[in-house]
Image (cartoon, rainbow, N blue to C red):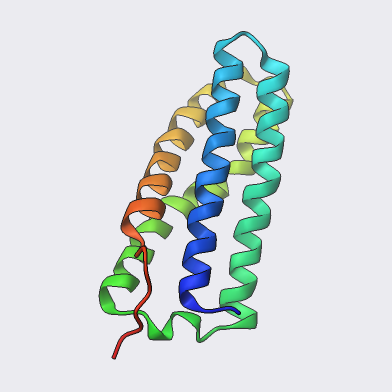
Length: 137
């Protein structure tokens, strides 16, 4: 069932899962395995893009009323999370393209910005969003 609590839980699981992939890709890079870094990041891109598009479809098309029951605090937490997650998601195609084309300087520069945004996405997604959902009265 598409309840607000289920959507928030799914979002937390998705953020945690792709963060593990991101960490694995950085470990591969540090280990001198750039091909594995690229492969893992391709999977990261696909899963993240699918998640973003899926959540957008649910919130905008399937259940546009889904966040109507959020408290003001829950809305604020979601807004803060999206201030990190949306720019990070927008950067993903550029990260993938610069990596595939081996534009190393630009890829590294974008990577630093992306990593800062992703840390914000992770922290706000895991810790700021409510762990349980009690709808507003």
